[in-house]
Amino acid sequence: MCFALTNGTIYSGYTTAQGYAVLIENDKITDLVQHSEIPEGTTVIDAQGGIICPGFVDLQVNGGGGVYFTQYPTLDSLNTIREAHLQFGTTSFLPTVISAYQERILETFSAVRKAMQQHPSTFLGMHLEGPFFSPQKPGAHDTACIRTATHEELDVLLEAGKDVLTYLTLAPECAEESILKRLADSGIVLSAGHSMATYDQALHFFRNGVTAVTHLYNAMSGIDTKQPGLAAAALDYGQAWTGIIVDGEHCHPYAVRLAKKMLGQKLLLVSDCAACVGSDIAFTDFGNFKAYYRNGRCETEDGRLAGSALTMLQAVQNTVNLVGLELDETLRMTTLYPAQVLGLEHQVGQLVPGAAANLVVLDQALQLQQVWVDGAAVPLGSGSKTV
Image (tube, rainbow, N blue to C red; front, side, top):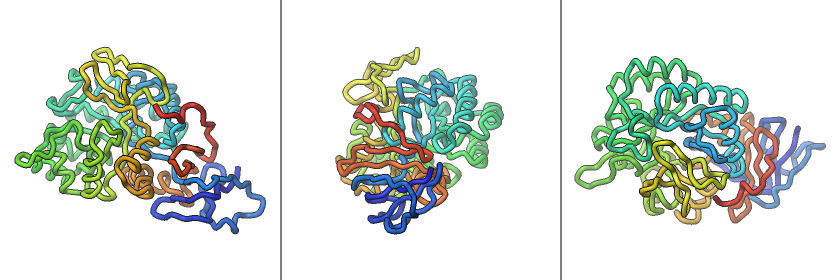
């Protein structure tokens, strides 16, 4: 299929254009041209004055459609999660596996590998969040699964996940230097999180293989003026890719603005979403605890945050309307920057020739109007509502 998407403001990545059209052939973007240069015979699709941008890219998706991937590590689960997130404009993501025993992690590798083969522009690899955490910062993870990384376990994980494991969150202060070097040398993006690292420790790790930070401010040592920790080091260093959850629950809008001032183009949006996205389930039962969905939060019985109920569409809306950032930069934080973390910015996250034809159309109120994945229109139903 060949078509042109036009009559909208195009946010292609670093540039914004009006009076242009995105040309698409089959599953790829072929060009951006002025409306008057659309080739004769091309099917023209009207964006009705809306905002045309790349499909959203999310580096931390725990579940969706009522399914938590760690709990149900199958290809069917991943396709259910994919369908749920397409309804909110997320066309590419990293399925995220929380702290688990090795056997379960190996199961998730197999499922993600199959999903990557089936939908390569959607499934960009896998984010393993844990189990190599500080016991002092487990968050809502099962403390029975939290452990110290060993070379013996890495032998298994790196071999089994060599074409799948893309991103790893760990507490670097809890790992031997040889472990960190081996992981960094493997090409996996190493992200500091669930960590009690001191300021000095964190700076050392940033300069020696740790290139990212997971959900800034949450489950980490903070910005104490006498004993600054990981959050302070991330803001001061300013060169590590840093994800932040803008749901109004994980951090105050002021904290997001502060991070943006300090980190600039290194700050990006993540959802850290749970199974409730695109579903009306009331809770997820993990066996050792339940995560409840109430009042816009995902939380344990005692009120601790356990992921989020956030979609990337809501993250965009919140970042513009609550935080006050400009739309063009907000869209880059949701598309281009996460793609750059993975080195995939020529494949997803931009509207450039050769990239996957993954696009979103929003109206001026930032409500979702159209979604395209691999050049195919996604039927939008009730899934585009606010969770």
